[in-house]
Image (cartoon, rainbow, N blue to C red; front, side):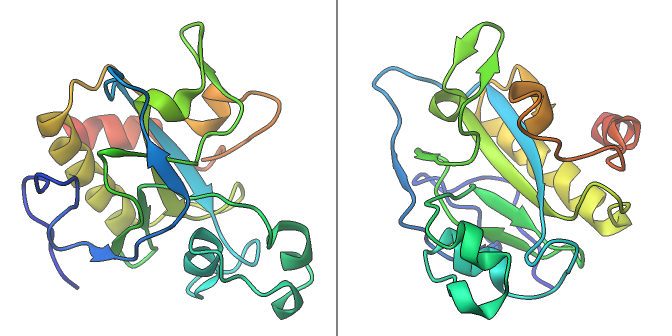
Length: 184
């Protein structure tokens, strides 16, 4: 498992992360700065881990007939900046300098369109299972790197910026554990 470096490259890529460029991104609005980290959880098919469904979804290569659930989502154009697998592997789909399409309809501190000023971090998981120790360790390390590069004001769950529409990272995500790791 590769370890990632302490800093982002100038073009917004994380050294040591596996780069899988997604077409689902665009430029941030002029003058917009990154202030927010949004934690998500995803597994494809739902509740199954270790496959390539997330990568295929984020690169527009998800085959509708590969699983019944995929028929509902295969045409969605979504992405996130980072994805942390259950074994701790960190993948990057969009450079931090660009706007990934992860938050959808969202609001933070009375500001809409959270994609404009946030970075999206997906964890391989679901609402009803705990995340792994190495995921928390890698997430904390990634957050430290991102805080070094940007003036991050807050870290929230997708459910916090899209209440009623989204539930992730879910009730099994341990916010206290993450805060403790970030204090080290």
